[in-house]
Image (cartoon, rainbow, N blue to C red; front, side, top):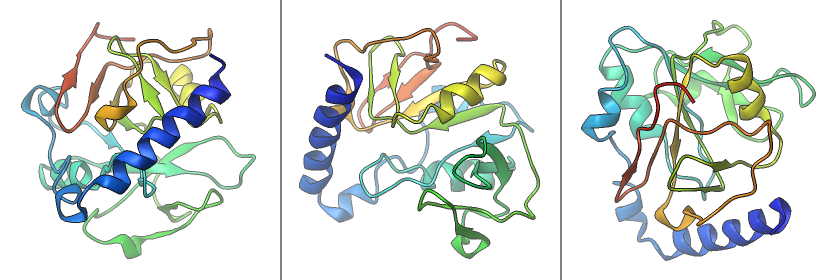
Amino acid sequence: MAKTALRKELRTARRAHVAALDPRVRALMLMRPPRPVADLVQPGQAVGLYMANAEEAPAGGYARFFHDAGHTIALPHFATRAAPMRFRTWASPHLDDLLEPGPYGTHQPTDEAEDVVPDVLFVPLVGFTADGGRLGQGGGHYDRWLEAHPQTKAIGLAWDCQLADDLPREPHDRSLHAVVTPTRLYGPWEEHR
């Protein structure tokens, strides 16, 4: 199946899954990483996350967990739609007012926030495989960023319904070090993917 059709199918499944969740239950999901994932983040390492849209697996609980443990937290930042993705610090994930609207409709750190290269990066996805394959939104932002920063461990956050038996993979597609869902941890796989 072509990537475009597969994205549509997986987004439909994700949308139905999220719509069926009780909002009170959803608010409790992915509040803190499982111990094997938390152990992947060494003291002093910077942690990159994302501002989830209404259907993506939430990353805010992880941001607060790692911030409270003393880690620098970073979010994607785009100067314009044509600009490459960078990461900038989010001084406190307890305060959303430290963010501003970005060109893709999500909130991001201000232009004045410090640039940072995350050591560990939690990434959104549309679909994943049990061996670390990832299907993103289609813009290639994370694949390009991870290609330029191969030392960064990329960990997917997903709903269980986003697991696919197989995904089409191209040379530019970056694999994940692990994937966390509300019920399962896939990986971690080899040290650097």
